[in-house]
Image 1 (cartoon, rainbow, N blue to C red):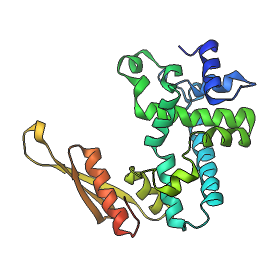
Image 2 (cartoon, rainbow, N blue to C red):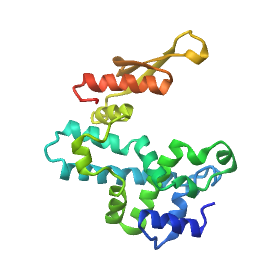
Image 3 (cartoon, helix red, strand yellow):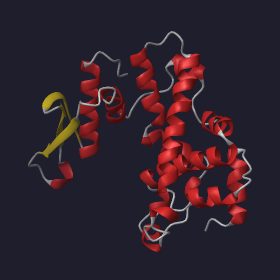
Length: 232
């Protein structure tokens, strides 16, 4: 349960004290707890937090990575703001501990679910932004983002190629990405999945894996590579 005491603990972890605790409590309220009502959950905050995150990371990279071309900046931003990164940021502060969940989500492992944690982290960003302004929100975000030295050294590995590909493609709003996934006829414990990623209906990358998600990532990686971007 995210009561005032535990939320105070969360404030200590992010280094920010809220003037209006209702922002923080809303950020930690999942829709399953609020009965699916958007006005009582963190879903709208998640929307705002995503925008604050995007502009903060974009400015951070633009200001500090002055020799990196636009395509490289796009890849770096995608790797930082993807769901996997946000999930890892949330895990660093044990964010799941503070989220208000409905009984169903609680019983099915929602407190550790990747999407719930990533969304709650974005909502937390928005809460800080609304309570303390852009400077405080940016300070919090950048306390989680890899250092410029780490980014320049290549120690930060890109991995969410679906997000990277989407970031590249969405620069042209008329373009549309989709995936087709199939599986072989082997026994279930030896299944291999095959994926094609398509741009406006044309295959631009293919891959395989032991799960649908893994196959899609492999296909997206091939597409990113064929577009001339480094993938390792």
